[in-house]
Length: 203
Image (cartoon, rainbow, N blue to C red):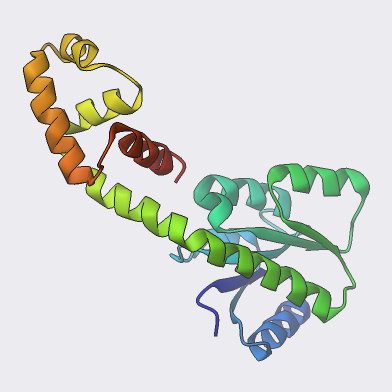
């Protein structure tokens, strides 16, 4: 069974249950939710997942759900949209919002399965990057407030002299803090440290 979950969101119980049965039968770990608000109210903790959602739903429609998920999980939770009310403007709107596929109802089950598996394969390739980001964030959390100030300044491209002026400390003290930051972040060069900062910022 894949380590990535598939979340099915549809306000029609028959469609929801049929998809759940089909996906689980294909060896996928799937859970279902009644609508977008139900999903957000019980938001899973999974680091990565594929979301399969209807568009026309009560309380919170698919368009707004996609926007919120983009803010909350970004590319770690790719979204597939399915709808019986497809039109060109809606498709364009959803694609701009970040969905990876747009499927019209009624659909062939294998059409859904192919799209979901495509998302899962993409997530598998993202896993090393996600793990590296999480590791960098954990190391960042070990920095003292002053070390964090130096870290932030370094990844903004500030020189030791500029950091010393900004923080009202001596350049030698900046060097000491810089060495501690490099050690705690396990960065062997300034460029590696900057990459870590960018990686964390993209989380």
